[in-house]
Image 1 (cartoon, rainbow over the protein chains, first blue to last red):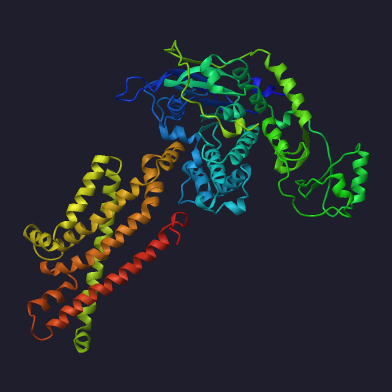
Image 2 (image 1 turned 45 degrees about the horizontal axis):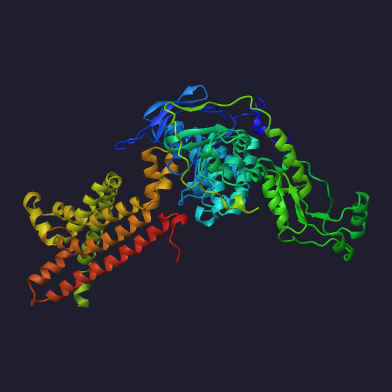
Length: 425
Length: 215
């Protein structure tokens, strides 16, 4: 199953906790400006999906996002969440029902991590015990150990950890909708990749409706079920799945925005969990090498064995030759193991493999438990398959139009930013 | 000198306490006024510059002149003293409160609003706590400054150690005149030190660990 979950339009019923959003001919005009910042946009955001708003800076994508929770009040038009028209309800009340994450988390420096996360539940009048339990649950969800991090202050956390807390805070009251404004813009590329994987894993569990603003097309391709490409005045140039945008860009503007290497970007559409990983012989520290070697022979002459700790996390990956020199499996964590999470894209996996000498990488699943080995050959197969799949048509497309569509598009967009990770293959 | 102090210990103690109490109460009142004013003006650049102008000009007014002028409408006693002390105490706090509130990163305010905190709640739970260390350093400046100004209150027959200074100065050359002035001045200095220590302690207690400046 390569890219089917991008193409399907509805997740299994009951699974989706998100709610659909409809911007109905929404316009934002600022006083003293001739052109509207957002020009009559009609945008349908399907429930339980990740929709990416991308475009050059100043195109109105952030304004569009902030009008969904009315942080910016629209000048004209309607906003509908689920079946409810929220255009004129109390803005603060509306925002409490939507998660909101900004760059670097936007945490309150004078509050502990727990207090930051507890803000919305407190405003909603939850009991102390319920809030405390919820805080721990959320820290767990974003892979931060509650006992270690609960009482820390934001400045005692790294940028990536702050961002995780920001996500936890946004999810605190279990809102159906999550809005994110350039959430991973302020972290280094490695942390960004990890946070993106984490978000995908969380989304797999929660099925929220997530709207993310980014200027990074690669991020949009990686995270989005749907991508909206904007040009000035929040005019929609193309609203489609990542596969289709890569395969059939609507015009030159989109082509330029995609940048070079559209073929390689297809790799970011497939995840490690979608391909078949090869099994491997596992062993634990202290085990006798002879038994391990025997198992490797039985398994068909494997050249490597994977050492896992008590929680099944990979800690070493010795080769047959290394093992033959030993009596017992050594303890201790091997540095720089080529490990990729299940939610990582094939692009990331390929990158990890090329860096490691093995031409393969270890795949980990929930709680970093070892799942199997992915090789370069597996990746090649997946590319072949996804090419065939992209040729299939689209059954359903959400609506995305403007009341005053512009006829002539700018021939070259204002220098789309390409993430460093996009070009390093 | 020693004898002078021992003989008048009760009176010195009482005046010191009155002086201290006047300054503390006026500083508390001034802090409230300054924070409310700052909260009203900090969002508008024009009002902010007006507030800064007022506090800059206000501090150049001679306190002696102010209290003298206030005697006309307010009479002698506690009222003109309190008004003068509060007025001067407000100015440095106002300035710091405006700066402290204006320096909060817009992203923090945006995320507070974005998760559904109302304007008021954002101010009370996010902006003021974050600006508090800066406001408090304004309070410390004010407390030191009005310790001296409160001594002038004696001119309007107000409470405090100013009485020792004024009566000493008016009979300079006479018996115990110098002693009287010295007691007043040293008393004010000691009180100022004590209050500053208390305010430092207050700062320690009320500043959350997350925004404490690390040394």
